[in-house]
Image (cartoon, rainbow, N blue to C red; front, side):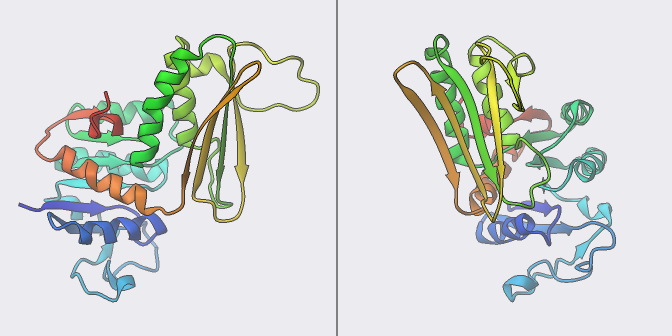
Length: 266
């Protein structure tokens, strides 16, 4: 039986890639396509941009979620949290790639996972999640004598900084070294800052052009520097990872997961 997929933000750049990836998966079908109220795409066929007719029209009514197996959501925190509540009501699992949640929002997602199965990851890329595994090893091995810096760059339209992926990478290193990111993170440097405090994790955020996502974690020691990087050249990697997550959730009733679980990297 095909996995019935609903997509939030279906007329956006990421949403369209998710629609296309769903159509390309032979064991998945597009169940619903959602967009925000007032969008000029409401009422259009979700696959019109591909020159096809799917019969699934873009809408804003969340009752369209009824009967879906999973909703894939890469929208904004406020929209995603509304979708979490709706999915919980209709018993629809979720894949969440939205970034920028505050602590209350993240807690609400975890709470909902008591009733539905949720994959929540700040980056759905298979490569990035392999990078996380490598950073666990590097963080432990380079725990003494190495300064850690996280550098990320995204397109000019990205609204949150640092990126959710950069925070995830920093948190991975901090955890591997027995600290919390809240204790270790330094997000800004300006003026006379004094010497670098040992054990901190610095973040540098770059924005410009159409860069999809570049992330580098540096371990800078005396006499050597190790850099572990991932560069995304196409958003299809996030859509492909999301479809993989949809397969992972098939048959699950509840629980909170991330892409490390999906890829069996735990």
